[in-house]
Structure formats: C-alpha cells, structure tokens
Amino acid sequence: MPYAIKATGIINSQRQLLLDESLPFFYPKRVRVIVFFTEDSEIEKEWIESAASNPAFDFLNAPEEDIYTLTDGKEFHD
Image 1: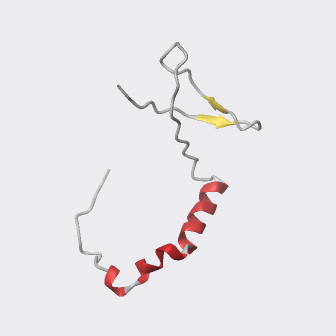
Image 2: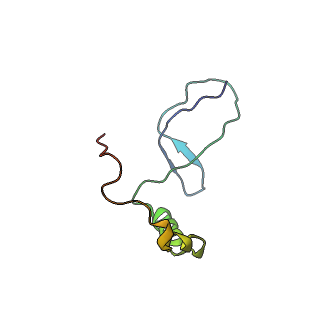
C-alpha cells in the first residue's frame, strides 16, 4: 500500500539527494520522489516569473474571468 514520508535534505554538487535522516525501512525499495525547493531558491523565483509571463494564462485577464470579490468566501486562519 503506498504511503508518503516527509523528509528534508540537500542536493549536492553531484546532483545527488542526501536526506537529513534515515528512512524507516531497511531493504532495497524503489521510491518516487518529489522535490520541493525552499522559498529562497532561485529556481522557484524563475518558475514563478516564467509562469506569470506565460501567454497560456492570458485568458485569466479577461473580464469574464474576474468572478470573485474581496467579500466572497470566509476568512481562513490556520
């Protein structure tokens, strides 16, 4: 049964992922990895700038897409 483990680590100069802690299993096992970069990552800034200037999202500027106001919904406090 699939499950997820949250872990932190670094990517070294050889582009290898090094985890800060050991994983909770002790045998060879294939895994699927998703890498989230920290907020100060240059890659994240480039991705956001690229997405913001991508013409594929131009339709969001159309008046008919502006369907929400500041009074819609309820405040969320976490």
